[in-house]
Length: 197
Image (tube, rainbow, N blue to C red; front, side, top):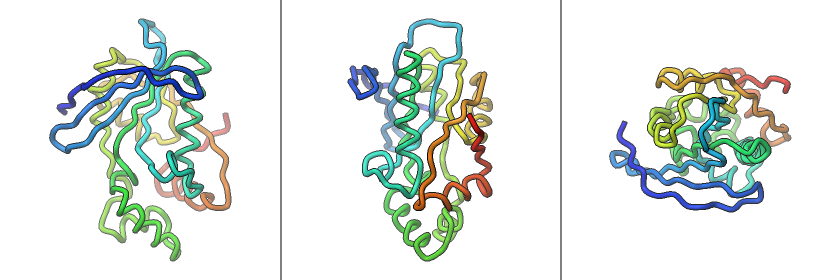
């Protein structure tokens, strides 16, 4: 995987000052970022989240998913411990893209669940590629992590890339009437774990 580091800058947020690091994938024409805090040398695993872009949840406040809430919770937790990173990957709609995600939403409005909707559009249930995480973490000098996720596939993907995942840290969010079925599908069909913290 060839991923080109571009530049870093300071990113002040409601959760404190982060650094933002830009990367380009020259083959797929995508840009990805990492936001980090307190990356100085430590033997302790770095608290991280791998977060796939969700314009509707992250920026527009959609209640159809838990993405925006997970992103904000991850930023808050990193701020609380003073050290961590979020790898923000441009893989909208579990890799199907924004417009196809809107098509999938319409199928969900007609009764399909999130997996069925993707499959009816001719996609796999989850099309994301986590191989881009390895060069991002390598650039930051990170090889051992505590991964904030409910998705055991992310743990397996990082370990397959040679990254030492010391712990999986649950990332619990509140359900609402608009995302309850979506969350149930994530558990039943995608293997997500919603442990009590």
